[in-house]
Image (cartoon, rainbow, N blue to C red; front, side, top):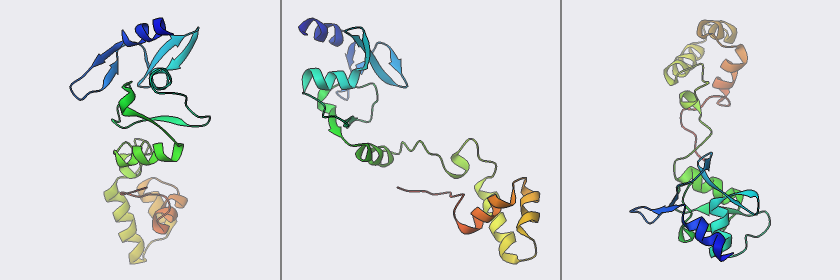
Length: 154
């Protein structure tokens, strides 16, 4: 194990914030390390080697919000819910709502315009949908507040 720790630490660079940045292979931003012919996430391995066991079903969370940091002082065990809350609190929301979503067909201004037109009561949802190049169900969800939000918080 001592040899594995030395090999592991040889792939780490310490930055000015105290993060131990993984300099070897990354997968989705997370460091990866091969030990006993098995690829493992480096931050989980760091926790196991330098702190202790990770309970079944638990995650290893980064207090520094840096995926490729393996500093055991920046790592803690937590639940999926804690991980999601940390992510939202740090502004790393992977679910992009409204016009922040690259697949969005409408902008925030267009949604406001749809709401304005609909409130005037002169056009059906089907007519509004046609004007904006979306289906009637999209207009319905916008008007119900169920399908398009400019500002979503957890």
